Image 1 (cartoon, rainbow, N blue to C red):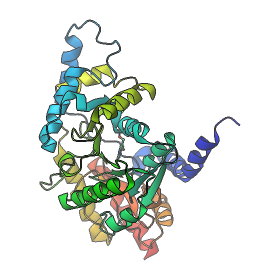
Image 2: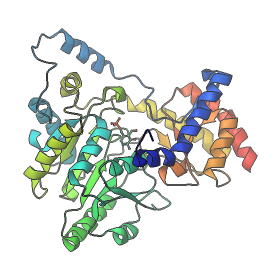
Image 3: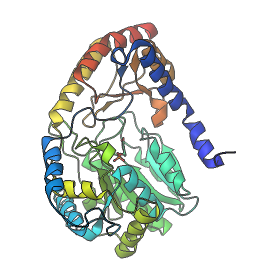
Image 4: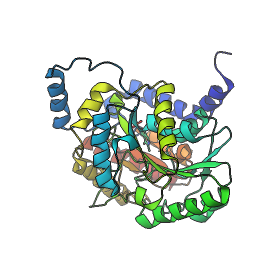
Length: 393
Ligand SMILES: Cc1ncc(COP(=O)(O)O)c(C=O)c1O
């Protein structure tokens, strides 16, 4: 056998997703890429801001000896300080550089966090719908992801979460703004989750971490502000990246910050720095650290995504699709007409529109449209969306 049982299992559980992508590629090969409206991937189509490119050019023109060498595993101390300063402003809590490390994206940061806190067999809770990679990330470190059905409005079911917590629970992951629903948790929700984890940590005798996965914090609409996490619960860890808001997912740069109020802070931070190294990341890419040091607060023009959201929501609502208008991200998560998400995504494929069934996010009966595409793709897709919904009505 070429691969481990564990990896085989993970591949099997994701095999339908692979088949779907293969089908999408086959459609593109047959009809030509331009004819296929591909909403299947969260790969930003907007180019990085001009400041990103010019900053990189500036950095390359500066002569700095040793700039490509290894560095402390948590990242350059001055970059950690700079990002910590920015995050302090967002969170309203004073962070030092020592409370934050630079990571290989949010994906890298989540793996570092989970490796640091999980004992074999521990549970990690998440409310549905959720970013499907969490299951693999927990499994990477001997943990098990336990999903808790969310409410119809994409809010977490706090009582249901409470009933799942045991002394095996290491963490609850939240992701707001959420992939795939675009939902943003209001402050009351985070406060209630914090209060629950505080109570349960006391009962179980272990710190249950709240891991907030926030790569979409800046991609919000209509004046929405994502509430800070740190003031609401002390055992909290935030993971983020520049993949989406600077449109640089290929560069693998992000950060992980620990609440300075957490118990055993030094031990936790030392564990986190060690895990960044021993997971093989060693440190986040040097050149990208230098770039983001100078780009705190910058992002792509969020209005471009807001326009795409409005174009898509306007079109789909005229056609009779049922959805909650997203407050952030570049995803829409409508109910699947007819009720069967796999069948409906298949019907869309027949109309050369590619989307992802909600089953892949733990929420069957919905489907995800990633609208980080050109406006023309959204416009062209409306015919396909119309024909697909007519088929099941
Ligand atoms: C919710 C969520 N978390 C984490 C990630 C990973 O992002 P990164 O490129 O920063 O690793 C993604 C990427 O799509 C995501 O949607």
